[in-house]
Image 1 (cartoon, rainbow, N blue to C red):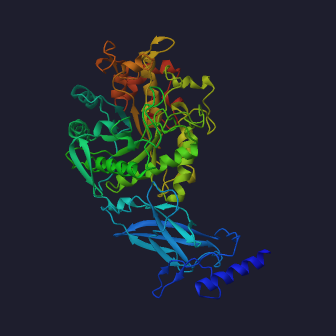
Image 2: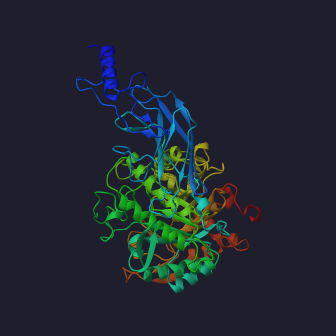
Image 3: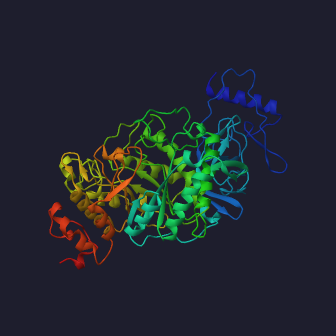
Length: 585
């Protein structure tokens, strides 16, 4: 039997079974009296031994808008291509809602809305915010029906304006200068940070620390429990920093906790030391998604306003150095799979944060390995992560994501980053294996390309959220002068680059474990007789440099003696658009 004969035979058989005739007898759905699509009654003829091959859908629904309007989500788009053959597909387009853990339409019949083909591609559905049916975090796709299954024929889109739901709309807290520091949260060292005149501070928030008992929090109809004792410490620190007019950046970290297995990617188990310091956030399961969004919402609500008794966090960094799974472990996988999982989780954080505080900024973080040390399974190039993240975000709807970058010297055990070109890993273009302080312009130039600009048309915000320079050279021993010179040079480079918002030093006090590895990054030395504690002993030369680095009257005077270690006569000779050039002698 040839194809034409077989096709006509099938049409006749179905027409008899359905009790209808004429064009469209194979339509997967018919219209009821009120115009609502009705379930298909089409059946395959019993005598047909070989069903015709169904052609793929020929239409594409390009969704270009998915936004909250009042208590509705409004979705608009435009059809491309021609409508699929009505002998195989019905006359309707169906809108499906997908939770972050739902990856396809297999077995789904619960479409949220429908329109007739030929009508404007427009849907309006309830937001249901604050209920167990909340759609704020969902994505949406358009599908067609072939009588057996729904087939996606659109891009997947998310709500792009969660900020319209925000309770807090205070202007973003901009630091008076770019000077920042990872501080020790003791009374003495907080006072020391105030004396340094720091304008930006980093607070690390591992999830295992904050989960516990004492605080019950209900979100979307479910109750979660947080440690009142631990949060009291964070409350005091963030409140005191906020009261001193500092811009607070919180780094959210997923460390191991046997009590919360849902927070780890399916199949991931606790890894040995040196394989995973922290674990990747995910929303690949329903329980993982529900827990993650609740924690994100809790933290954001607690720390989103200067009027809050707990203080305000302005910047949220989701994970640490995500291009290296040592800090964001999800198990060996390709860059594309890894980034797809991360982007989905990032959107949940972004939505929770921006729907509570409209001006808060949400960052992801990479190290300086721009095109270096990637293995494609556990380590990825920072440039590839940046490119892939952006390319995956665009089809789903824009987010004003930002970048937290870590431009350490290479190797980290030597402070003179100005000599890093000797490693062969520094170039002054986007093919550079490493991008750190000496070629920082490569990063900021790259982000000014059109595909990376924000919705406003402006470049992304970049903070240098972690960098340090050792005062203990691996090859030469004590190097306090070189550390002070490196901090001065690096800060001037960041301060003179208008696309860098903050320069946040790691750290205030040396950590014994880092000192043992020749990474004495602190402005204070530590007590090495207490390897499990960070106990400050005395200030280094770098402390005075950092205190005065942003002081118009003292900065050049303080850094004068360190120019000889770099081999320069004027800072403006090596720093483009040097901020203090007019004051140089």
